[in-house]
Structure formats: structure tokens, C-alpha cells
Image (cartoon, rainbow, N blue to C red):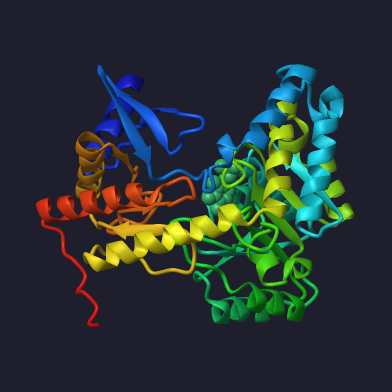
Length: 407
Ligand SMILES: *Cc1c(COP(=O)(O)O)cnc(C)c1O
């Protein structure tokens, strides 16, 4: 076999389908985010980022930066070991306390990313619980799917957010069989929200554990930024809450929050927790500062909601089709991978607006989209420029508009 030809051919297929991924080279400007410098070959230009998961601009918050500088100066660059072998710094201990408190749980456990936390926690739980059945929402994130797959446990997929289907699957099982219901609160591509209360009621009725990924909700929802489960008063009904420090908290890292016994169990058995270097102390310090700030400040959350509402309203005014959902994520549907990429390229080239096209396999074919994430650091002028640019490109690409709602 000619290995290089094999690689090239597979990549050529991706390009033909319009699904080849090109990364934007960005230099984010601290203090001026969402502004950044973008470089393509010799072209250098200033852009406004509209697709960041730094949802609240916490990546440049003065408290976060000060905490990181201080920890870096006091403790140096890296943790210097796995958590077990010299890598547990006081910053890690404080951060885990902060996270447990955020979710009203006895304990929390840090991982190097949200991906790793899902992968490690789900694979450990599902493989170690005897004869465990995992009930997984059809739209769960890849990190959850891979964790479940790696566990080799029996897995049944329930139709997205369909509690009737979930109940059907639960009812078919013996009551005493270990069961784990795995789902998310805010689904990141459609921006819809799971019926958490109903799922918890089913879990109680059928003796199942609940595993909730709140990655796109922590920092953003609930009076202290604890997520949708906090907002709805349901945190105590969830067995395990998983989250990230890399999105609304603006830093990097992942975690789970649960009972002391469950965290200790994962700490003791999860290879993805044990055999990897701990996060740098400065990262832990920055994340702690970010969580603390968002526990007592709702300014960022309120302003974000306002910007999201403005973008939606203005898109609707000019008939640009976007998914109406109850979250902060605005998917603008294009429905064609080549056009989606083209619009994204034109936005960058002509308007200095950066929105990465979202194509297969991140979303199903035919639902290609631009995923817009307004934040408190976007100005009303940024919003106007965005909507004007999209209107212009919609006309040029001859894309359909929504009928303007009758007044
Ligand atoms: C991004 C994401 C993760 C992974 O979190 P990282 O900290 O980026 O690794 C997990 N779950 C969902 C739903 C995500 O969107």
C-alpha cells in the first residue's frame, strides 16, 4: 500500500464534499476581544470573531488574568507531575472546592479538558458498574460517545430529548440493573435544552443514575452560573454534572462534580485522570478566579442575553433563517456545505467577520450552518455590521429568506 496516496485521496474526498476543515489563524487581542488579527498567507487583517465559545469574554477578564499572572510568578509554568505524583498544587485543591460548591455537590474532580472528563468518567463508570446499560441521547457530544464506546458497556440511544422513548427503553429493563442516563443540558449545535426535570423523574422511577454534560451552560445559566440544572433547581437530582473551564469560564480544563464517593471512585479508577500531567497551576488559578467572579456577577450574563436578543431580532427583520431556541446559540441555517464555506470566506474577506462554517460530521449533511455566539463584548455596532453583511451575502448567494412575520 502507498500510505501517502491513501492519506491524500481521503483528503481530496473531503475537499470535494466541501467538508475539508481550514483553521483560521487568529491572534486574539486581550482587552479588545472579540477583535483579532487574522493571517492567510501574506494577507493580514483585523477581524471580529462571532463564533467563539469564550461566551462571556472571561478569557480577558482582569481578575482571571491577574490570578494567572500571580500563580505563574509564584509557582512557575507547569504542575510538574500527575495529580498522584507531585502534580496536585494548592491551586488544584482550591479549584475543585470551588467547583463542588458551584454545583452543590460534595466534591469535584479536574481533568485536562471537558473532552477528557467525559471520556474518562463515562468509560470508567460504564465499564466498572456490573452489567451497566447506558442510555445515551442521540445528539450527545463525541466525547461522551467515545467514552461510552470505550467502556464496551451495553448502550441504547434514545431519540433526542424524547422522554417517551427514554421511558420505553428504561421500562424494558429489570429495575435492579445498573443504568446510566447520559445527556446534555444545552446542545451546542441547535441550541436546544433538555427536559432535565422529566429525565430526572424517569431516573428516579427506574432506578437509574443521571450524567449531565453542562459544558455549554456553566457560567451562563443559573443565578451563580451553575448551569441549567441550577436555574431549574435540579442540581441535587443529577448524579454527576460534567463541565468545562474552556468555554464560558474562558480558560481550559474539564471537570465532574458529584458525591464524594463517586469522585473518589473516578479519581481512583479512571486512566484518563490518573496517567496524565495535571493542569498548570496558573490555569487552575485563572479558572478559580473566573468561576468566583461569575458566581457573584450577573452583568456578563445579562448583557449576553441582550446581545443574543438583538442579533435574533435583526436577523428576523431581514428574513435570515435562524433556529429559534431558548439558548444563547444562534444557528443560521445554510443547508449546503459549499455555500456555507463560501459565505464564511466572504464574511472574512470582505467584511472582516469571522464565523467558522459548521459542516458534516459536526452536524448532519443538509443542515450546514453558521453558528453565531453573541457575547457581552460585542457592541451594538458589531451587531449591525454582522447583520448587514449577512443580508448582502444572502442576496448574492440567492439563498431563501424567511417570510417577514405579519405585524
Ligand atoms: C466542547 C464540548 C466538550 C469538550 O469540552 P472541552 O473542554 O472543549 O474539551 C464536551 N461536551 C460538549 C457538549 C462540548 O461541546
